[in-house]
Length: 319
Image (tube, rainbow, N blue to C red):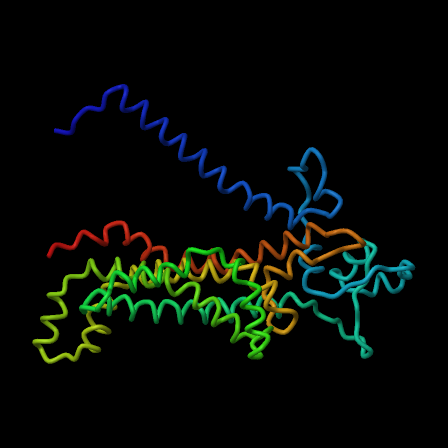
């Protein structure tokens, strides 16, 4: 027979639910603020008190993807009516779309910066998780001379804030020709994520019983086959969790992307704040760029949610 809950337990449970909801709202407030600002007209973005009820529009997203300049003279009635709807929204803001000599609309640098972020973050995450998993497996399964010292040395690479070594790294990169290159950022992000990946994956691999591999080795598997067919599937939860954190770190990194890149390999974080309107920062365009920038991380985390939830009971395997 189930135990009857006392009045105090019911009150505590209700209070806990209210507290969780309150904390959730606090964490979601900045995301709502960014999303709402992205769909606001520019004149409502900085009103005091903030405008909560408004008619959403997509002007900021249009301005984010096309190059534009301030108009000296308003367009003629014929030019305004002949323009597509998205160009008319820019006309209404007192700006015009920049076109090439052949009349083609010139795109802004945001798509290229967004693609740079994808290339750098995905590649560095794959490299950091892959090398970190192999390294963690070696520390977990083999006797390594000075293991604790090596692990501490690996961890020590994360003890300094990255910006502290930004100037030496910039000078070194300039000397070897890696400044403003995708390869340079990938190497840098991989190096800084590798220690985190090793330590996190070692904890997951330590939880996998060695008897599984020993049985595979008795059946004729090589050590490498046992790793890929036995250990790696069991450690998939750890791989997913490590990949999410490494991807978020590389995706959001700002200081190195600002210092080490200029145009060719610049990622989205240093580019988004540079969006300006008619003499002042256009906060709606900045919010639109930030809103789109949040989507890949949210989608990636959502796709791996089942593996992340399994991590709650990962250490429950009996040996």
